[in-house]
Length: 392
Image (tube, rainbow, N blue to C red; front, side, top):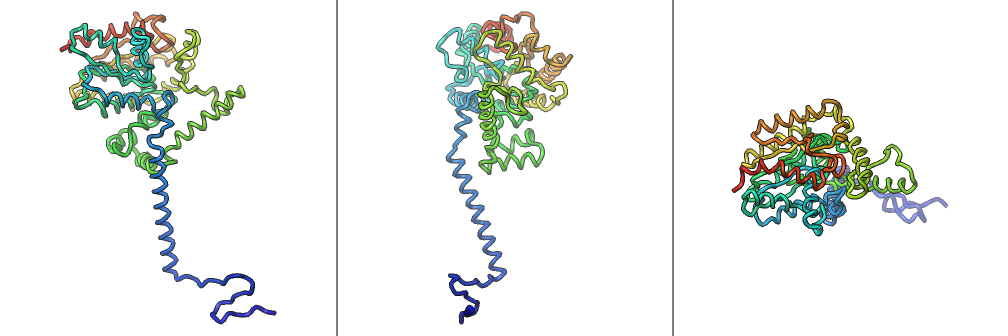
């Protein structure tokens, strides 16, 4: 028996359970699409806001002291809690961080670990001996700090009632060129301290192109895009852990650095030495061909800001062992020191060149680049004459 037609119009097939809907007017169809798109945008925004609020300040990264922003958070929080203006602020990478910590650990074995220690009892003691009244020293030295990072710490924090009398900035070739870091925006300091609130001030320097600026803004709007570097890092760490368990290297990665980026806080002297050479061979890779003008530019801006704020700067070319300097291309170190000295002098700052100072022997180093407490005392001895004229 053929299907019957409904008297309402469109055919209704018996047993089909439904009818064919009438086509919507063209205008109404576009309206529904626009409404759906609007709700999709609203849902996207709500989900992102919810994820940002739930995640807070990237708790995983803030807890990671070796390969995250944990050490940065600790330093910034301690600086904000200072009860009085610092006399001296120390700035630089672990080359500054380690010797000042080891000197205080020598004085007091119960001193806080290196990540929670942001002072220098030894330097305060020496400053008191020079006649300073109740001197205060704060250390903004952070593992892996680049010159571009140092500029952010000065610009953001060394001002107003937190402006020190002196900034002691230790620097070395790795602070201007690190093969592990593709650009100034790749550091944990930049990722942690530059956000939407201060984007306008830093964008022209760190993100000169509109594409880079657009990507930065999008990364702070879209949660998963903004956290892609952290997610990728966790994937890489898990992958390397698996391959390490299997006794092989991850494909295309070679022997990847461990969570400490090569720096060893323990081990025999021979192990630390060999590990340090391996680390710096990687970090110095292609350093002779890389454009250092960008990082030198940040040194120049740092010196300019300090001059404008009345902060006296002592810039130290940090001591390095001959074994470490020999990893650099021929004549590179001489050109580096000459340019650094000229730049420092042009801003009226003091330059302390200790790169190959003969008083630093192998016994003064923890590894090929980091001074131990013996070397730290020699460093302070060379620094004090430059601070003596400023005593109050």
